Length: 276
Picture 1 (cartoon, one colour):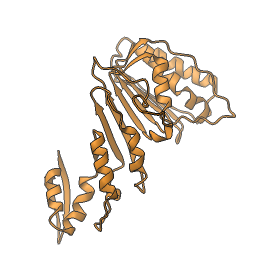
Picture 2 (cartoon, helix red, strand yellow):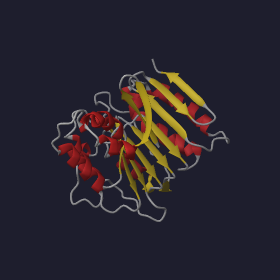
Picture 3 (cartoon, rainbow, N blue to C red):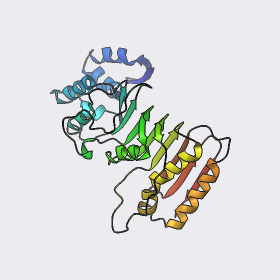
Picture 4 (cartoon, rainbow, N blue to C red):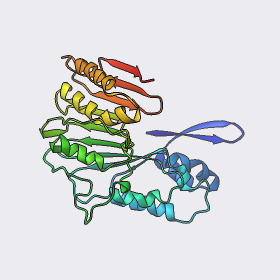
């Protein structure tokens, strides 16, 4: 993967270099370091506790170089956990957040082996239960997780109050029964931020659609100020689309607070509805 580096001298010169070579160039002089650092740290992927500790040490290290490392980080930091669940390290992210003036979005991706054991909580294997404010992830992707029921997935997502987007791939449920959700009280503000859900190969398309609409119903009924009748009609439309035998691929359901619109996407259909 090549990175484009623009060198401004008497004229513009486009130089294409791998990140490793850019890192070597940054040690040439302060001028090169100033231009290379924003490109080197534009996209960061943390794969272990050691990577997180190294980033924290780099943020704490005194430096006279500009721009500062905290200002070079891109809008999103990716955290990837692959393999068996052993000792969690995501809870240590809040220490890095405290060192950043403008914290980015955090995208967490966890893949469990087919024969592995999926944790029932992000606090699994921790000596104590931590509050949800510690796990400040805006995006979550789970692959090959095993749940006893749909409620197990819902409990896991409730531990992430900052979550805005969820993607589930090849999730396995021993019992797939979508629970009923009552309309939220108008006196209580909807605390969930979840507004985008993607499911793929978790169950039948119709079951996945029922689960997605159930998970997004608190946002639709409270945050978007929809009445129950309008949301139920939209659910019927989605269910009728999901029963089409041609739907085998990923479907995505999104709700927007800012512009108040509803979007349903899959490879065969696209449905947009303005809520205003």
